[in-house]
Amino acid sequence: MKAQIYPLRLSWPIPALTLAAALTCGPLPQAVAQAPGVVIEEWMSSDQHSALLQKALRLQKEGKLTRGEQLKEQLKNPQPTAVRFLPPRNTPLDPTLLAQRAREIRLWIMVLYICPKCTKWHLQDFAAAYAVAPDIIATCEHAFEEALKRETKEPLKEAYLLLRDSQHRLLGVTRIVAVNSVMDAALLQVDPPHLIPVPLNDQLSPGDPVFCYSDPLGQAGYFSDGIINRFYWNSNRRGSPGSLEQLAYLRVNFGTDWAPGSSGAPILDQCGNVAGHVSSIQPLSRPSGNPPTSSDGKNDQPPSTPATSNPPLITMHVGIPARGVLALIRDTNEQAGDPPSPPSVAPRGPDLRPRPEETTSTKP
Ligand SMILES: [Zn+2]
View 1 (cartoon, rainbow, N blue to C red):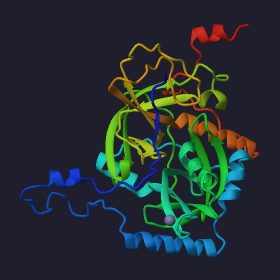
View 2: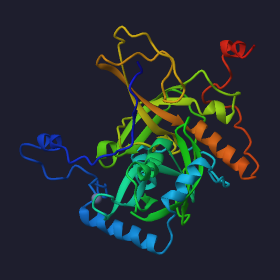
View 3: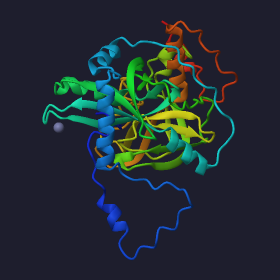
View 4: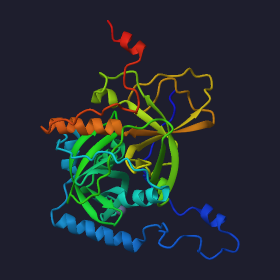
């Protein structure tokens, strides 16, 4: 038995919750509680959505989008390209400013496809993402890969991946730069290269404050805070210290809130750097007679996770730490023939030295 892991792609439309109505019963005060200029989050209207669909179809007609078939091929053979990432910022921001910044940098990966049922074009959000360079986005692997695989599930005539930014601008996803399913991370190239890049910070420790801005269960623009709970390995099977093979198994628990629909969203540190991204959610309960199982290293299952037939007692929010994503970027740069960046000096982050028992376990 294994603990249930919920990947966080939002795969169905969630109607406006009736709970919201329940909470607003009774006489409502006028909406004066907000400071001037504060954004009130709202659902995309059907008019806005059809305008976006028309924009996407224009890009498709102008030949500015890459066919899903081609991208699917690149899942097997990624096309590395040099990624010019930024050094981390070190000026702490007020949480109000962080919320604004998180809102500005948010990105959604969308799929444009001809529906096999109604034969009309549809445009659907699939995952969140963040820019690591003006033309490169990072996201979780499970969500966008699923978007491409839709083609095989119910053969679609045509499908394309697009990126939407906070200004509702659309960009074509043109190339799979790197994919790592063990890490649940991917780098994609978009065109035109007009994104606001966000630095990654791998010099963080448990206790450092973090923030998440995402659309959990379709709820628009939910901002939450928390701390880094811990860094950990999700498998005992890994490569040499500091290698991509090793860092693909590094995970982080964040104390921020998220749910399906948050997949790929960046988790920001106090300075607005990316501390990691949303991968999965893991409710843990007391074991009910089943012995703990060990990880197979493929599904975010840490060793000795109990079975989950009892009610959950704690819900772990599993993220992919910046250090893993940076390792993926450096590996990509190396493959693209770009000199690798120098290693971080005096890291404050998770200790990557092998534990004594691991050192001995590598002996024959
Ligand atoms: Zn349809």
